Length: 344
Ligand code: NDP
Ligand code: GDR
Image (cartoon, rainbow, N blue to C red; front, top):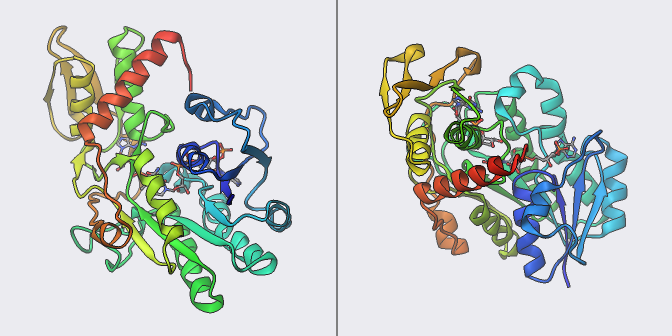
């Protein structure tokens, strides 16, 4: 029976990955941070919190002695490093904390692997934010990087240090350059879930207006549950490598709002431009979505669209769920939760 260690089990991807690995017969250790109100609602939603092979450990990625002790204690076959300060917007306000966690955190784990057991396989959660300013469309493993946020720059370090430990010490370090992936378990600070949760509240009469930033940003959004399967496949390959996971389709934030309204059966029309652009509900003629420049970022990533053909060829991985299906799934989950007064 294999042992896996997942850092960041309280986030979106951790519980989906844990669920997959438990189904495959792994023993899974998930790490969470000490805080005044730790919540495990995502694991609860997937029904894995009380699984006999699921264990939780308190841990902070930035504490190097904790990394060495953790790996010595768990002795995993595979480590999935999902822990990060992962919100791009916050990284502009907390650039140093982001560098320590999201960038140096990966080095802490790789060093611990080198010291404790170099045979451990390591997955680094890299990101399409590495591409940043558009250099090539679609973006693939060979596209030059130009990150546009402290988060992207920190992830660039984590990516290259993974490649460096692969080349220097023969450590099995795989780097997955994953494009945006969403789900009903997405944090509400990210735009898709902010939209589906707010549209659900508007539908139920619990909110009047949703405020958003840049409506024209284009993202390649996939379904998180399918992306964690790709992470696992990267660690089962014969050799460690770097892979893009993406759907190959890109849509604007505005399109996602329209899709969510359709799923919630709210008829809307768009009017105005730039900061004055609004979405109006046809039935009531009331503005339900407007722009608030406070949500703009100092530097924006305008267009992401990925080419995952290498992952398809080498790993047999391909996305299945369409964006319409994903959006409808998220709206439905948020309608149910808001009816129950759910607040995460
Ligand atoms: P989330 O933000 O939902 O989860 C991040 C996790 O990291 C949380 O469990 C968080 O714990 C934990 N964490 C934060 N800081 C520390 C720390 N100092 N020590 C230990 N744990 C910490 O991210 P996702 O699940 O969406 O993403 C998983 C990974 O994949 C992240 O690294 C992200 O950057 C990357 N990624 C995500 C993409 C996406 O579209 N979702 C795309 C590409 C890459 P806490 O709850 O205590 O804050
Ligand atoms: P992103 O995701 O920055 O791509 O990072 P996010 O959902 O935060 O933003 C996507 C795009 O939407 C625009 N936007 C808004 N974003 C938020 N959060 N809130 C708003 O109100 C809003 N209005 C418009 C943003 O400007 C942006 O263009 C996510 C994270 O999961 C990263 O950790 C991961 O690495 C990348 O995806 C791939």
